[in-house]
Amino acid sequence: MESRDLEPWNTGRATAYGAAIGAVAAAFKLFAWWSAPHALPAIASELVGAALAFALLCGVAAALRNLIARRLIWPKIQ
Image (cartoon, rainbow, N blue to C red; front, side, top):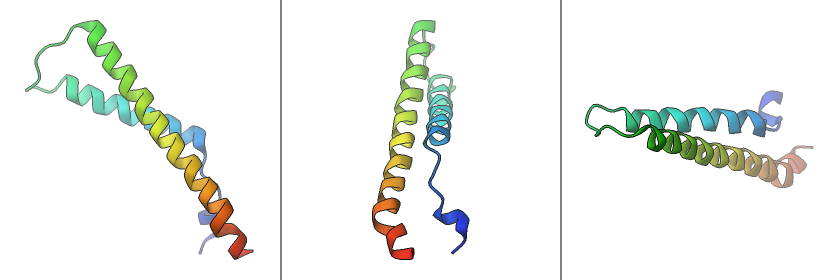
């Protein structure tokens, strides 16, 4: 097992990546050719909402991974 595998995940980076993924997913959904045209406020709220939701999801997942690794895995290794 590499020492890099034992490092905690950066929750800030995971949150930023989650926001980017959420924004891209919302943009794909909104601007798809089979989708009806949307008003600008609807587009903005959809992009912001998806970005915040994915950011929260990824940030919590990284924090949970760090908590589990710190409590259960790393004490057994040392």
